[in-house]
Image 1 (cartoon, each protein chain N blue to C red):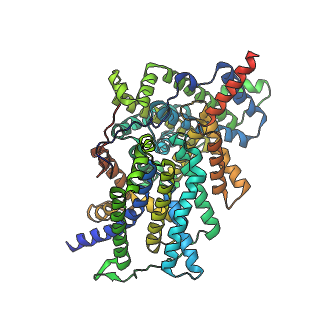
Image 2 (cartoon, each protein chain N blue to C red):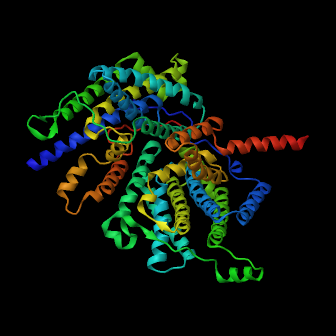
Length: 272
Length: 347
């Protein structure tokens, strides 16, 4: 039983990393209605900016706040400069644009900060949390911040005029425009907010996975795994490291087949 | 957070391409064909090899084009089908000693079945979820190929070395009358070209046929298509199967041309490259596949030539320039050219 609880705790600790990152992805999905493949890279770049600020002697929370603001502006700039001209282009062209953005950010970060792994400080400390060896105060703090962010976002989207306008701009742009929502700027705002949330996620997970230009690749690859890898690896004999990914694949496909709209998603009713 | 009842009135994800706009005119086709036949006679072996790869990737992009441009399904998992095709060919050649040409139909068939079966769970998915499932497939494939259980067949991490075929005796003896010799690369190029042309004609005719019209009806409006009596499930899985089959043949050809298969040459990056090739060539425009394939083969090299450290950024910028100038890919260029030629003729 103790083994089981420990494995679950370890799973939650890794899961928190993914949850944090997933928030940013969900944010952009809410705002622009498609997935931004470069989201992870944008978060990585923001994290590097905060690291650079700290190297220049800015204290942690100062760097945190500055990075948040810079990322917000950066996200808006990317939308205005690169994706607004593509508004009328087909969706698949947008996806190609995301891939291009991914390549650009990754390569520029590698050039400025090179590919060596960097230590990143944590504001929560790294002593064991509540006496457990598997979950540290940093991971507990990370889970706390993720939950807070989640609640804040929920309140923002559900109970504010701005949030409503953003949801409208994403799901029914024509009608939103008719009732006076500036859809074009709502999208830019969505980009800014997603970039800011991504930067928080990046700064939170950097102490765990260390800072380097390819850190998000590992996170996305790991996104396929989560708690299952710990459980399956411990309990099912013959499941070593090499089978983790295929098992995750089988899991994803099973989930998608049983619940095509995602685990907690609601089916969308279509009108012809 | 979204409302339970959400009315989707937005345009479908993939724009409707009329059947006629999917191919080239006869004259242009012959011109391109003549170019493809003549050029290798005047260039070095390495360039011939690159042209072979151009055709191989062209085939893979064409397959994705049938799936996405034809039936409106999106896939990031083409690298997995490519890998299965490549490994089928390599294993048959190296372990069973089968003639290289005979391995290709087998690779195509294996991939067709694999794609058809994968199409079953994919049936229930669309948009982002389908992209995610196929993405998972592409990510898992290299791991599966490295598995210890299959190591005897797949060669594990090391991969398999494939012998390059010589030109057949008859061709060589005919050429020797004219005191000519055909290099392995050149033979392989013409072999690939013949298969590419055959598959291209097959694809064009497929899209013109009843099945092709069913694909396009599903792409444009699934509900309306099923109301017209189209078996949506059958045709969607069929599109997956055909696409995977063609990708498998391309994979087999690629394995023979590169003379080597290893798990790490079939990562998600290959799938992304094929996707970019389709967008650059123009979604739903079959001849664009070869242009897209040229983009994904040559532009990374050009980017590396401009700046070693920033090659990724240069590649990204070039890609952005392309989609800014022609958001609809090479098809847009072709349409404008056609329009200009039409005006010129009128005068």
